[in-house]
Image 1 (cartoon, rainbow, N blue to C red):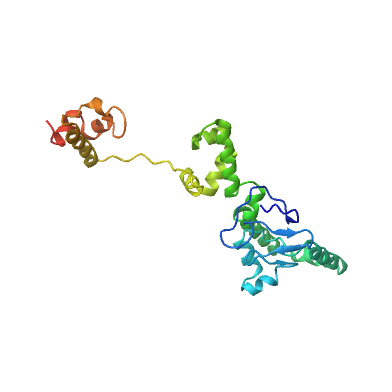
Image 2 (cartoon, rainbow, N blue to C red; image 1 turned 90 degrees about the vertical axis):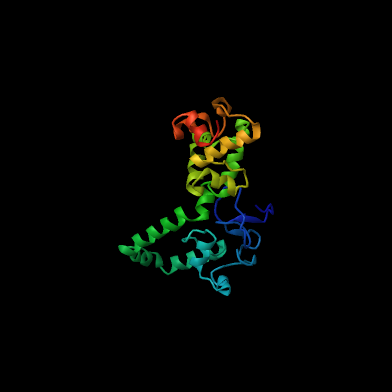
Length: 245
């Protein structure tokens, strides 16, 4: 995050933050200049008292803007001073009672459901607040590896840090997807052996060593001797299928 003391986040978040690949600032975060009480536009990087009217120049409405940059749909795109003025005017006009009336019945339930769907499940702001954005998950993984003194496996994470294990599963689906996204080496899945690949393995050994392969030559590694027995019934039958006497 920007170390400038004049810049802060408009609502509480957990560091580190995930930088936007296209645009300015961070995903799910509104940056505020404390001295001027202005907010930064994610699209062009300029600072304004209110973003609602400004983003119309980018041919975008407020809901689309919030969804694109992971902001809560219920959060206003205005500075604190502007928000205070709106609140004061609303109290003066006694508008709160009217707002409560409008929220009765179906309208209130629909609004609540939409808030939960977009804020809790899809919002980058929610992930930042709960420490589950990509950068925060990577940081927690690195700290766990440093603590254990080795690169921990997915099974180790489930035992050592269940919250981190759940965060990786929800955000990346698989451990390999997580490691690939973070630029870490992925775990290769064991190769599924077929009869053709097993015969090729025997013939390659025969041509390279110039002798008939024995079962102890395949005690370790992939394929192993047991794989030949499972596919062909016995070691001698495997040799016969490979044309080796």
